[in-house]
Length: 417
Image (cartoon, rainbow, N blue to C red):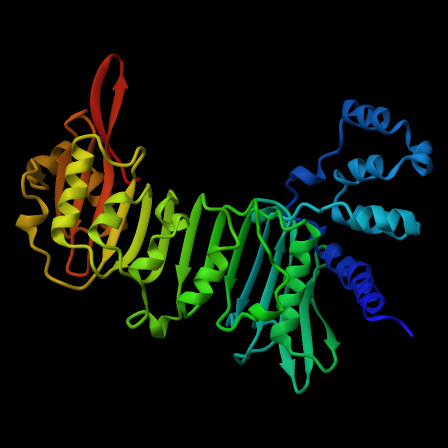
């Protein structure tokens, strides 16, 4: 009788070379005819270099494990699967060589799976992406759902120049939610948890069953949850310095749920250059002024008109965030316009400005909405400026005026960042 560990290894093997192999046929389906990075033929120089490195493929059987792993690092997943079934030693080499996975998504209750059902149904989608470009086709997607006591896993199988076919398998006596998470985390494990981007939007993530410890290379994070503890759990799994962060809650809870001030002190929030929160965030004025974000967007709870004024003054005096592009603070209230611009030289968007910035104001209104707008110059470089846009439901600041030079003439060019 197989031990639990042997049983788990057998299941891993079955999933790796059964279902995964089928899915990877989908990944390699014909695209629009454009050549992708992974479909380019290796140059003779690259082949020669690889052959010299391993001593010729005829000597593969006598290579030690480290050399085999070094070669396997450069194989795509399908080639790894083919190699892994050649021998026990090859299987061990494949299994112990991390695979490159760029991104994993786990999202519950997406509603657009019409190829499987015209009616909405409870589901969890798991997407695994092997390339930073989503359109490269190097990815697959599975939809997990419940049928009685069993889990149904569905996906689409693609054929060249034919309609895709729906495929499915059944995992008996299992919970679809837990199986989806187990599947997604196994793919993270296959890349040694070194993925670069993650999206998790799940209302009841089974943290107690998770195998995640840390995602050392994950710099782009999008988390959907309905409680602070869940957000905190995920932020503790990623590095302190992120490149982008998105936090969101269910639409129905966005007017009630608030990220507390203490939670917002997390360096992953304070230091990220880009963040977008689809929920209320109780940043204090001091926290708002100390953010390192070049681009940010959140439902504002506690930032005052005076805090926004100080933010503008810092930028005017050259003490703002380097490379600042935009910030939007959402809140339905009547802002005190005089307090927002107190002590700052502003230029209203009047007829003269619209003539000077010909075409820009119309573009800005279409993309950002007009509101009451002022242009504010930098004291360090008067050719650079920001737009303060005041609406009934938000205040936005955009870096729109940029120093330009053409034929020896220096001037301001206006554009939406």
